[in-house]
Length: 405
Ligand SMILES: *Cc1c(COP(=O)(O)O)cnc(C)c1O
Image (cartoon, rainbow, N blue to C red):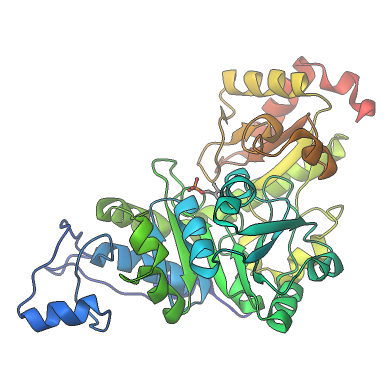
């Protein structure tokens, strides 16, 4: 792939008010105008370079937004207070009552709950489909469908979406293809493959320090302007606004994203190969055994690897819990939801991040009880980590009944 997302981020150059090497942080909720006429024009949304009120935009949020747009190769971007703030805003901007969405069924639990339980209150209905089957996706489209929604690498099952194939379907039926790229920043550039809108939870890899929630919507200037419209913009009117102090902090963390992603991917690849060789059912897009390994390879920006997320199945929830507690006790990581931290994080998705999904549906999509989701950390010595993890696995008796898996 020719796209060089990290180069595009690095090529941005912003100085602070006094020549500082970092842009100044805008510490104001409201902005003065030299003339009343400019204020009117800014309200009308046609005055570049003027700020009105911080729920609409701030210099700090625009800096971060431009860096994320550079990463995703879109015209511009709008940052939000959380990933869910970005997702719900984009969906509500594109859909009105009686509209329909076709979504992958293996998506983030919060997104699933929004589409399944909340959007129907507004008479927006969703069909959940197996996103890896393009025929099924197309068959679910109705005359009212407006949006095709997926995650490039899904949470928690790590299914990979054929973004180019989905884009073809979206174009044929006049739909907007929204891709949540939270699991694969830098590795996959969805717009290169035809996505219309790219969303991230900045909470995860991009910020990378588990100290805040945040989100972003990357898209055309026209779409981002519509989100911010004072008349009918979902982000402007629902108000999921990121604070400027926080966006300045995320921008600084984002500068090391390429180095971190390489290390997350390298460590995850090492552990995935070891776990698989040890006999665990291991899901990692970098493994040849992954059903979409070649698809991921064909889409990826090679430098950044296959990402930091992997799952293993240890047979039962009890074993999973025992293992996770022991690994935490031995300081191999934290029993916590979320991802993209310097420490390894692990959780059992069936009882945590995907608990919004009813049990029968979990079974149908292959979300088993003994599944542990790992977000692999930045460990300097991953061999030592592996040895210590293997020791934990032996201690909880996993190798005695591994044939059961
Ligand atoms: C965490 C997450 C979200 C939600 O983001 P928040 O910042 O927690 O609101 C959405 N999509 C994916 C894939 C996620 O992992």
